[in-house]
Image (cartoon, rainbow, N blue to C red; front, side, top):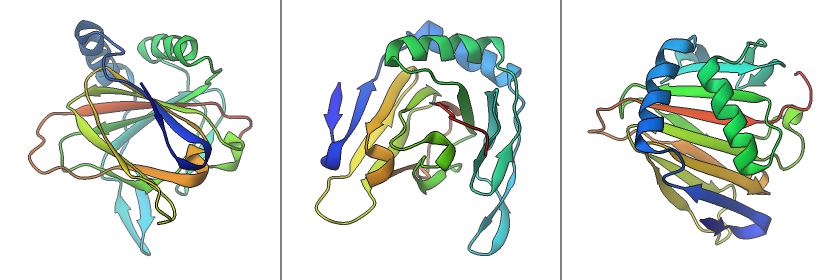
Length: 194
């Protein structure tokens, strides 16, 4: 389903991109295959632990929020999902950042995937596994653009394209009462190392 946004931005959303069995298998395998870390970040001048775990894979290093992620090989399951997302989206993604949310207490603040090594107007694809969580997509400026709240469930695929990273920010807010674990895989194409 295509969701047009303002200023040439758009979202493509498929709530059932993976079957329940495929999603179950991927979630279980990624828990075991990936090397999960909880890193420190600086927020309002204070060093705190990220409110989630991260893992990644790609031939090039990636830098975001003051973190530099060294090159790391794709695991078998992440590699299979990369190949499938490339075909579905028609993009030559070469990096994945995985976020592991233990419960509704874990979150990710509003941000855009607009690092220089992604180039102008990058295409970004998110595969969601596990507990359904809300992804908020809202304009950077309050000039009448609409906000989108999408419930990304087990096996969903969301693609953010056009000028989305230039004009919008996205994030996963805390959701009290959500008990299940969620892993999201964010696929990108890095043009160069940071």
